[in-house]
Image (cartoon, rainbow, N blue to C red; front, side):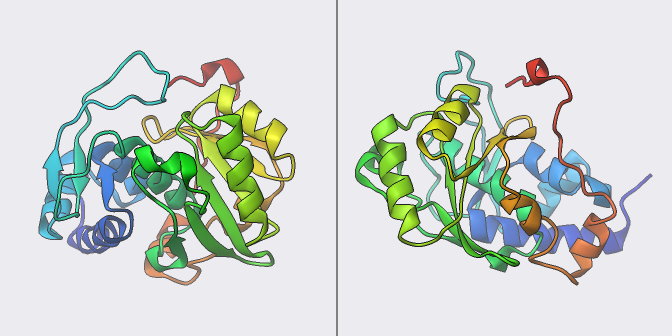
Length: 239
């Protein structure tokens, strides 16, 4: 069934917000994110172009230790094309943000820097206001952080908030984060497949899903189609 003009106008506005806030998104991320509006690959591309997006096709590892480097169609809004070394982190954060709300203004990036400088950088990746919790720290580890970096970032996060949510596409790193930051909520989140699975549940992220933007036209539509892709079989977590 063809996409309606109303839905195309809406998805164009939403993709514009996404690229403004996150800076980057793969075409598959956009298709997954707005599947409830009937978006196709061609419509995602057209919408991204209409809001000034530019495209390139880098090879990116789904996780830091992945042996495969699939070629991805990445749309971006930065004046300068993002470096491939930074893309996994930016795409991962964009995937996490899409889990929370369809109102881009409810998310605030703080310490997103190129990967080469992050070892000495302890500022959180993002902060978000969650109903009944207040400010919550969000971190994304593509699989590069050492135990020392995780510990330092967690200690800094505690000076900003009582609540931390850590996301990673690596099961090994999810277990590592859970052991070092026992008070954090930890999720497996893959920007490449869109799969999500909670490892250490504190109920933080569930409070933020579909709430921060309550009342918006997009959220009213999305709430009817909300789905978290958690595989029933842990072994089916494929990256």
